[in-house]
Length: 181
Image 1: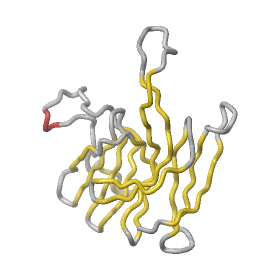
Image 2 (image 1 turned 45 degrees about the horizontal axis):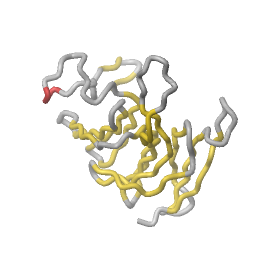
Image 3 (image 1 turned 60 degrees about the vertical axis):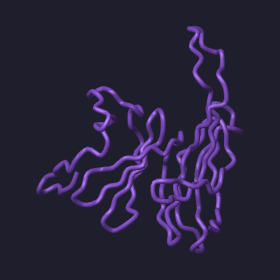
């Protein structure tokens, strides 16, 4: 959307509607699952980028003025929460889900995979991500925030984790990170 309260707002387009037109999926067919939790940032003056969580993977999309959104599958099961652009490139904070095994707590016979979670910092390299650091955390955790620190290579990250807290509580952590590459 763009515009102003006085002149009104116009929709400039849908970033991602859950379908993949190249595969000619029907209106309700979502090859990667329903989209949620978009994290938008601007890697260059004429470019917008977005990390988008789905049930099956995390997508990265890019958009340049006058062009359509282009989406790429990262093949990573991540829930993005914040991106910061640095002089050394971009950094992405995300909750990472790792399937570890099936559990038998379901009475209907379906055994969905159980996931371990952690908060991870990635270095953004175009449409690829390079793992920089996995922070301590377990059970339900994530929604990390990022901001600049005291030096150009230092960043402050906040996140929550319920791994050590009694249910239904969670602990909130603040970590100071030095990124050297």
